[in-house]
Structure formats: structure tokens, C-alpha cells
Length: 281
Image 1 (cartoon, rainbow, N blue to C red):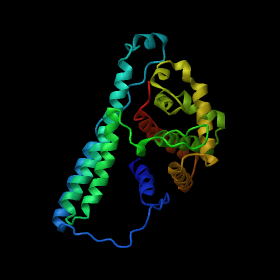
Image 2: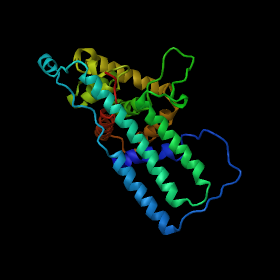
Image 3: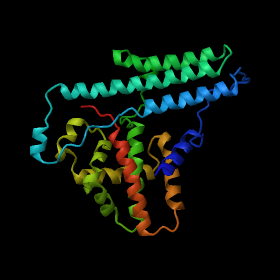
Image 4: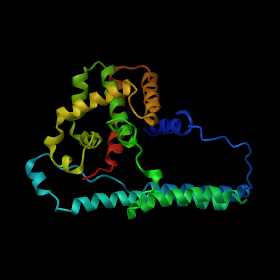
């Protein structure tokens, strides 16, 4: 599981997704600390980042499907909104702490004045994110108009959908029909967190199972798969889908049993990703 996820993340950050040119420096020089100091600083950075990223950020447990359970767990007016907002604010604070960790590393490992401009960049970026909690929105973080009617969903949603569609693809290749494959995923109670990936879903809608029933979930899975197949997904996710298909096709022999086993692993990753998606109320 870790090798599968690590390989795809590595592809994303190694440049295989295609870099966006922002200007090429004609000269690069830096005065670095000693190897020992740099190694110590790097170790401190990695530990700090691990602590920051491992901070618990999971979605609340799925509510039961019975009407009585929904009624019993109905939140007090205003409380759910506050809880969701707090999670978003905490996530922004976590992003700021990542920037802060990078600034500290640069301060230790990079000794010449050239570091100051780089530190200032991360400082400004972190502040822009943090100030969103105070209602201050920097143009950098404003949503740009695309000139299209429909707005794309966030990449985290598409990343979760990618794992769902990878499982769906495995089921198709194992001999299942489109309908059977989609409903196998949708009707599995273990996959309830995947409903967090549905377009325009909210915490309120999730508390009412009839809003997103098995049929709607199955239809969503087939629609997502078509979007991936037609390359109609965000560029940041599109190449990862190609890498995912390559991994599926590279698993030999591709017996139905092995394909369905691999589908289970993909669904596990999908559930993990979906559980961390922050939704509006």
C-alpha cells in the first residue's frame, strides 16, 4: 500500500506532471552550512513536518443510515457550522506551520543574504493563508474566473475519486459489468465515507442518506470514470490517473482475483482520502 501511494506521489513531485515555467534563473549561488549542520537541520525539518502532517485531521464518523439514528444525532443549530469552520481554520494554521518549518530550515542551512528573499516568500504565503481565518482574503487566494459555467471541484476530491475509479477499473478488467462494478462499490457499507467525494455534497446532506443513496453513488462513480477516461479532470490529477492505469496494466498476471484484490487496496486509499475532505455544512 505504501509503495503504491509513494510511487504516485513521487511521480507528482518529481516533475513528471510537467513543470509550469515561471522564469529560469541565469545564476544560482548559495552559501550553505556545513554538511553536519545541514543534516541536523534537515532531520529537524523532517521531524517537524511529520509532526505537523500527522496532526489528526479526520472527518467525523459516518452517521447511521436509519431514520432514528439521524434524528438522534441531529446537531444543535449552529454547532455543526462552528465545528466545520474550526476544522478549516485549523487546517490553515497547519499550512502556516509548514511554511514556518521551511523558514526555520532555510535559516539554519543557508547562510548568505540570498536566503532572506526566499524566507520572505514563504512568510508571505503563510500569512496570506493564516489571515483567511480573520476574514482577510489576499488576491493570490481568490478564485479566478475561468469563463465557464461549471467550476471544477477541488483536487483533493478528484484525488479520492481517482482511487475509486482505479478500483472500478480493476473490477471492469476482472470481467464485471459497469453497473455491477459501480454498485459493488456503492453498496458496500465500508465505503460510506466515499460519499464525501460527491459533487456539492455537504455535511447536512450526508446526515440524510436518501440525499445520496446507493444508486446516486453508483452513477457518480461511472460519471467520474468517464471524466478520467475523457481527460476532463484537473491537470494536476490527469497525469496521476495515467500513472495509475500504468500500474494496473503492469500487474501481471492480471487474474480476476488479483485485480479485485488490488481494487480493495485502492478503495482503502479512497476511504482514507475521502475521510480527510473538509466539507461545508
